[in-house]
Image 1 (cartoon, rainbow, N blue to C red):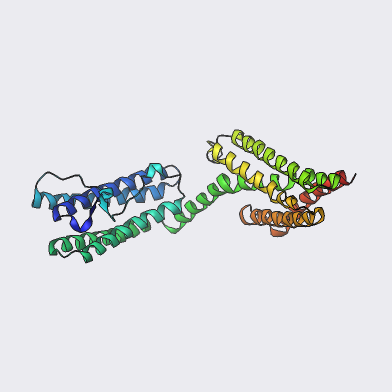
Image 2 (image 1 turned 180 degrees about the vertical axis):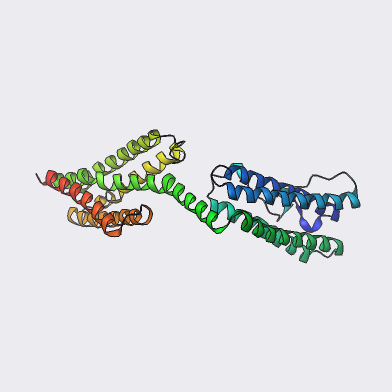
Length: 318
């Protein structure tokens, strides 16, 4: 790799042409990924790709005037310290806010890079060229704001944000909550029944670990096979299954681990405290994401947990 300061004016211009072309393709890729669910934002990125194409055309005209027709292939990854961007197709499905932030960051980062590079070079022509490119990126940043204002009025932006929040809830929050509730509540009975019947904390731990892992595997497969997400918008079934399975296991292991404590009395106290924390977290998630009032969420979760806990105690004590 070469340092940016080692590049000639011709090479800097070739690098700028390639960078503008790459940014334009990134914007088109983003638009394609947003087209179905966020058509207004997709239109913004299509127009921003057009702006990048215009920048590239101006750079090509300048290059042809000064250096002729042949443009050497100089890529960002060939120059030390230059900005490297991961291809859009390699990114996991981003949220609408992630995409907007990516676009803003692209313009700001490129502008900062050109200005920093200009300040470090002693060649007047290179400094002028880099300064011109920084100004062009600044103008493009302003234009991006104008395009957003034209295509994303407040009402449309709020609608897209609400849609993104709904997708996040369906694809991540809901599977996590289902798993956490199942793992935290369903494993209470066997764990406390084993602890009270055997009076051996380690036996209770083994029962709890087996119940948690078994429930995690079962819930993970059940969620993954429930639907493919094509009609419900719940996302990839395998990701949902993994999330549900992991949260189920985590919910069960939370009050299982205290039974590694040799003292049964102390292990029971710690486990009960953990259960209270788990049920509080579940109640908060239901209130925050599921439009449930705090009192209703607490009563529903506490009642279910209390019934399962009482079942375990009655069976273990009997």
